[in-house]
Length: 244
Image 1 (cartoon, rainbow, N blue to C red):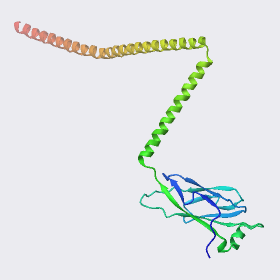
Image 2: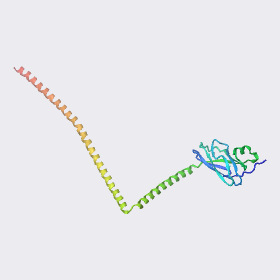
Image 3: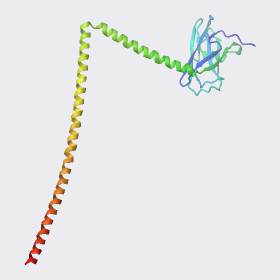
Image 4: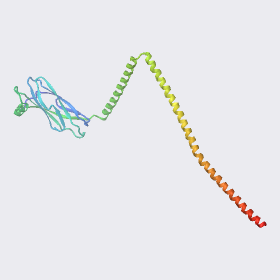
């Protein structure tokens, strides 16, 4: 016996699309609507239960209402050569008027009372140029928003001031610029004085070495003169003795 036609209206009807990159949880929404005048029990099943998180995955949809089911694809390493074989099935049955236990209704349901709809999963990976364009668009929008916010803040600040306050601010800016220029000149002068001190220190440090060298030379000369005097004295004594 053929199963009855699904009474729930599914949106989307045939496939669930997940757009990458799949480095984080990707969520898509499945809308289930009950157009009948009776409550309908439902269950959402998948061929890859470890890959998806479904909330809610079962429940009761009141007559004339609808619910949104969040289907969350967990992060995984995407392989473009691997086509997805994952599928979802929405199973439903009409709830009895005196229903008190939902699980008991599913257990007692006959096969001919069950209705189901199948959906396949489709993975979409954005192209490189789309990702680049998206990143550039985000940067441009961010810079524009910052520029607009700064412009608005300046306008609001200017509107809240009178001419006298604006003039005071301009004069203060000029004064600060003059002070900065003066500090730069002082810094330059201090650097020049430091350079002069370094040169004088190097000259003073080299002076003792030169005086010491002069002393060595003078001591060498004096010792030579003394040696010559002694030599002449000895020669004179010898010559005197020979003359006598």
